[in-house]
Every structure is written in structure tokens, then in C-alpha cells.
Amino acid sequence: MSFPWAEHYTPKAPLMKWVDERLPLPRLVYNAVGAGYPVPRNLNYFWNFGVLSGLALTIQIITGIILAMHFAANDLVAFGSVEHIMRDVNSGWLLRYAHANGASFFFIVVYLHIFRGLYFGSYKAPREMVWLLGLVIFLLMMATAFMGYVLPWGQMSYWGAKVITGLFGAIPVVGEPIQTWLLGGFAPGNAALNRFFSLHFLLPFVIAGVIILHIWSLHIPGSSNPTGVEVKGPQDTVPFHPYYTAKDGFGAGVFLILFAIMLFFAPNFLGHPDNYLEANPLSTPAHIVPEWYFWPFYAILRAFTFDFFFIPAKLLGVAAMFSSILLLFFLPWLDTSPVRSGRYRPLFRKYFWILCVDVVILGYCGGAPAAEPFVMISQVAAAYYFAHFLIILPLIAQFEKPDPLPGSITEAVLGHADGAPVAPAAE
Amino acid sequence: MATLEDTGTQKLSGGESTSGEEGVRRRDFINIAAVSFAGMGAVAVVLPLINQMNPSADVLAMATTEVDLSDIKPGQAIKTIYRSQPLFVRQLTPKEIAEADAVDPTTLRDPQTLEQRTVDGKKNWLITMGVCTHLGCVPLGAGEGENRGEFGGYFCPCHGSTYDTAARIRKGPAPKNLEVPTYRFTSDTAILVG
Image 1 (cartoon, rainbow over the protein chains, first blue to last red):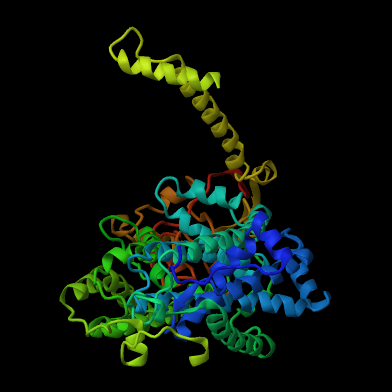
Image 2: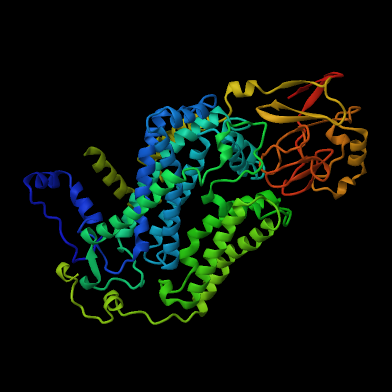
């Protein structure tokens, strides 16, 4: 599971020896995120976002468990209980704002983590399983975030729940019974609110479980690195602790500063004023939009305004939206180039940045009203999104002439293959 | 111990006499029977776990609604609630009826005439769900002074679906006309929906 030169866990204190012989949990931690895990010496700050995602999940679980102590999951009182948290509960406003903005920050770091993987080819063999499990985590996060947004039972909560469960109504024949079954009624109501609360509490722990699998599968080949060249010897790695615990600690500090700025100075910047109105089944808000992290997918959903081959537009939109994520599960086999890192792939690099711009455009259109020119722009941008993965990537892999790769990580770092192991004193 | 030995000897003898007197061993039968029985039990347990998510009795009990039509003037509409979803009840003006009849239904996305969408002899009463068939928003047009869209019926603000004066889809992403629920006139001025 690790390189042969990994440092070994040797408990010194008698108590730790006693524990190690009976339950080697400290040994597991040492080998996973301690000095026992050798990591490429050349990781840049983009490699911080995995740990930052874990930090964001921790913030969400802690604030969420506390909020659940004060929240009442009943459609008659849910909205009031959220206002109670905001006005009456000691520090309730802080915890709720931390939870709401924490969700946004969780998605920010996860998106950076995903795009890091896309640029540096982290999804390629032998790390396909890491990528697939990461996508499972992403899907679970989306479900969790959606259900959490319903809980305050404001206008956006209610209508968001109605529109998103309406997506299942687009499935032929069984769609409407499925929608009624998901909601426990003909429209969102107490039954839906309660089950969403129950699942919103459960799923973060499922995410934590899949994260363990994600890290486990990562530690079998070991972490990738910005050159995409595999580790060749002890000179290419440093122990995770103290090198990357320190680097991740610095990243966590920056993350928390930005989080605090948002939390204390602009806590409602990413929210919608309509969600401070209690849910009203008889009045639709003028402009229903999901939270910003769903905008690119929402734009793809709304891009289909016409029937095609007798398939209704609604079903096409729903299918396209789900495909846009499911497509990523096939990415390791769509990009067949043997070179991992975008650093040595001049053509791939250009199209990677075009994809980034495309996703930002999709996001902008998803947040805009459903009117021209946004519909037309989302249609073009959605088509490009699919073309990038299904046409452009496989073609680049065929025709691109990659730049020469460095002989090893050490050579890339030092400019020469010196072969001397990294001594802590020399760093 | 005894079980293990039994299995071992049976396997051996079974392997030797493949075309022998019995193709199926007693143990195979017990194995399949036990696993099938446990599997059926597991399915039986899953059924209530899934079924509990369907609408409960109190939700289903609210399944009919009575509406008094006496105060609704021609050109006016009201919003009421049917199965915890909005219901639009609208009395059409003669002009609106003429507009709806002027359209050739075969040119529509969901071809229906106004007659098919209303009760015989009560063509002026348009009773539909106030739920956009795209993704379930409440269209505008039933309230005083709301935007009725370019076809004079209903307009959904979410994704721009536009319905005409027979609440038929004319423009935008919605696939179907606004749903007409089952209802009957209990008197000249009252209906029972559901």
C-alpha cells in the first residue's frame, strides 16, 4: 500500500505500544496522514483542496448537528424555527450563516479539487477509482445540499423542491408516481420536509464513509503530482507529516480567513432574499434559481426548449443534466493520452481553459432569467461541454504531440537527476 | 464437523457419479430453499420501507375540493387549492372563447379543443391545475393584473411557458397543456373537483 521506503510506525511510550498491539488505530493514522505516507516532493497549492474539502465537511457536520438541535422539521413551524435560530438562539445567527456559507465554500474547494484533477490528469490509470469515488462524493454532496436548502421552508426552498422533484416527473410513464412517492404527497409538504431533514442528516456521514474509500484508493498508487511522472525512488518523495501537514495547514489558514470574511461581512451575498419569505404554494417567486453551485447544471437543463425525435424537451433537458455528470464517470477512458499532466500537453491545455470558460458561461446563464440571449448562449455552451469530453478529448489524445516529460520528479524540481534523498535538514 | 465431512463425501461421490441416480443433492436443495426463503423475506421487509414514502392517509383525505363559482365574473379567475396544489377557475369572456376556437388544434403541441377541455354546455368555465407542466411552477394570469402572456391565457415566469385562453401550451418548454382535473357541476354555480 505504500512505498518500501515509507517510515515505520514505532510506538515508544508503553501505553502506545499496548494500544498498538490491541487496536492499531494510531498506526493507521500514521500511515495515512502522518510520516508513514510518502508524497511526491513537488505538490503545488492545488493539492491543498482535498484536505480543504475535508475541513469544509467537518465545518458542515459540526454546525449542522448544532442547528439540528434548534430546528423543527415540520412545515407549520420550520420557517419560524429558523428565524428563532437567527434571533433567539445564542450565537444561532453565526452557526446558521456558517452552515449556509460553509456549503458554498465546500463547493468552491470541491470544484477546484475537481478541476485540479482535470488539468493534471489525476483521473488516469492507476487512479481511476479515486476519480470515480470522488464523483460519487460529488453526487452525494449535491443531493445533500439540495435537501438542506429545502429545510428553512422559505419560498426558494419550497419551489426548489418542487422544480427538482419535478425533474423525476419528466420520466415517461412512471415519472409522476415517482415524484409523488419522493414527496409523499402531490406537492412538497410536511412529509417531504421531514424525509429531507432525515436524509440531510444521514448523507454527510455517508459522504465521510466514501471519503475514507476515496483516500484508501488514493493511497494504493500514492498521490499524483504536477508533472504526472510517477514516483521512481525515495528522492522523489517527502513524508506527509510534517511537509504536507504544514502546507495544508497554511492553506487551511487562508481558507478560514476567506470564509470568515464572507461569514462576517457578506453572509447573505450568495443567498436569495426570496428565501426569507415563508413557503407559499400559491405564489411562485418571479425568478426561481438554485444556489450558485448548481447553475451550470441548471443552464444545461434549461437549454432544451424544443422537442427532438419525438422526445419531449423536458425529458431531454433532464437527461442532459444528469448526463453532464454521469459523463465524467467515463472520463478515464475517454482521454486516452498516456501523458497525465496538462503541463506537457500544449493542445489539451488550451482546450482545458476553454472548458473552464465554458463552464463559467453556463453558470452565468443558469443564474440568469430564462430569456434570450441566455437560452441561446446556454444551448451553445451546453453543446460545447459535451463536445469537449466526447469529441475533443479523444481527438486530442490521438493527434497531440506532447512536450518532453522530465525523467523524474526530482529532475523536474532540481533541473538535474541528482538522486540524493531529500534530507529534512537540506530543505 | 459432521457437516463438513458430509459435504466432502457427498461432493466426491457426486463427482464420480455425474450421470448417476440423483443430479440434485439434498444439501443443494436445502441451500436453494433457505436462500430463496430468506430472499423473499427480505423483499417482504423492503416493501413497507418503500411504501411508507407514498402519500399518507391524511394527505389522501384532502383529495376533493368544492368551489363556489357565483362570484366569478366573465374575464375573472380565482386561485384555490386542490390536493395542496393551486387550481385555476376562470370564466372566459366571449372574446376569449372565440380566440381559443380560432386556433386549428392540429397546429398545437398538445392538440385539444376548448370543448374537450371544458364540460358540455359550460364552455365559459375553464378549470385547470395552476401547475406548469414544465417543472411545476405556478403560472401567472389567475390573479388581478398579472401578466397573461402573449396568448392571453397564462404565463409561467420560471421558464417562459405561455398558455392560451384554453390553457393550452403555445410557446416555451412545457410539453403539455395545463392539466384539467376531473370535476363535475353540483349546481349551476358550484363544482366538485376530484
